[in-house]
Image (cartoon, rainbow, N blue to C red):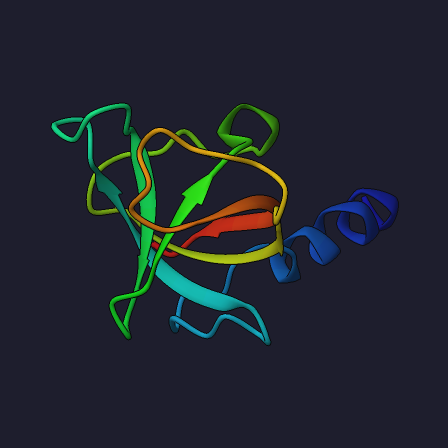
Length: 98
């Protein structure tokens, strides 16, 4: 019993905080830009900057329109996009804010 408690208790402290605190990560909202030529889901920041994500399939998040997320990223300076609504990035971490 004590062994089981020791395994389960740390899980309560892992994951995205429920108080919308991104813990040194950026915060944004996923927006569906499918209506624009060559676009899909993008991330829109509070300052209205837009990021095109190159690797949605590599992160553990299925993007949905209106979903708030905390994320870290790397800028992809040498990648081109046919959507051209924002800077191209690769996500290194992504967590849904619930």
